[in-house]
View 1 (spheres, rainbow, N blue to C red):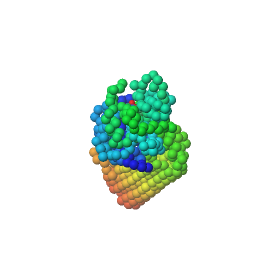
View 2: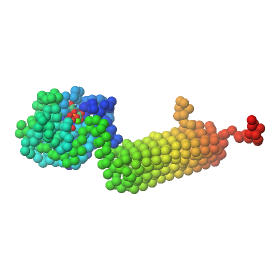
View 3: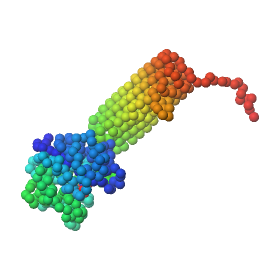
View 4: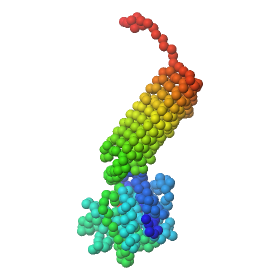
Length: 458
Ligand code: UD1
Ligand code: CA
């Protein structure tokens, strides 16, 4: 809990050249959320207010992506260095007095406890500048922490290190707590006399010390948390670490993962207890799965809500759909956005649904297309039923009332209504509404010619 005013600054102006992507680095997806969503969420959970995001490269896209969050955006038109980036936040923090938590948009794995510890250390020590450090087996590329006894003297960037300094394994994670407004006075004194000609935020350490302010360095136990994402190799490594955390939490909460190393669950997904998930399943976006469900191998489920006791069989793809309890889907079914199953439904192999509301206990077991349709209760669609919803220009609706039985290989040419308890004969092409309790047959009568084969033999 913050004992005093707490604000956050998230640095996200860089391009991320090494990603080789048309998407700015902070928008690269990690477990279903853009990279910068992680520091945003951390600062929200810590109660930071305001949260200022420094944007630059493709700033409009970055702002649009996070427009639903309560953020203050400031623009850094030219990326002149990390100190310069923080300075951009000064105008919107003019009235702010307290602790500034400084986070990077490309460092997604920091745990809440770690950030809290840094803030506690900072505030208990009465420090003006605190930095989170880590010990790296291979510190190449990171700023090195140069200590004099227990005290941190300065941080030296890789390109400015001496041979001796290069050997130092304690590195700067790029995460800081700073006291405002004093920190902005120190930032204004930072120059760019270094190998990269940039305004280095790291220089704030030596400046603060020289001017008699208290500087603290907290060491992070698990250095993997501070991993910065610069290229797609690191992106995949971070995804793996995050996957282990997410899957661990689900298992502890009562979900069986047959092979957690091969189960891909996005960070926002929720799953009920006693659900079993087989290898190769992917649960994406805002998916919520109930209790006692089975998700088989290769199922891809994106932003769906699935009721208790449902079974999603192998190879099925579900998107933007809501499934009631006891739904059985697939194998290899395709539920597209706007599919609503009321419960106890069976959607079998090679069935596709789209914008379809399907009542309790209704089913389509094989080879069927249900699009722009409304089905009542206890409807049975035979193998090969097709709602012909599109005339090449407009989409039309098919309504099938309770207790209808549609024989195999029937086409229902929309707009059309099939009345309650009626029966459609197999192989029919239905173009007109069918009243309740009727039998509708729309196929040519069979013609049989006896002995035809023998007569025509050569
Ligand atoms: C920085 C640190 C280094 C540390 C490392 C940890 C400095 C000078 N160096 O180096 O000590 O070990 O992070 O990962 O601070 N950014 C801006 N505007 C700029 C420059 C950067 O917004 O003008 C943002 C980037 O988008 C990124 C973050 O600041 O999110 C860090 O910048 P980056 O260039 O990646 O710094 P590093 O060289 O990794
Ligand atoms: Ca970096």
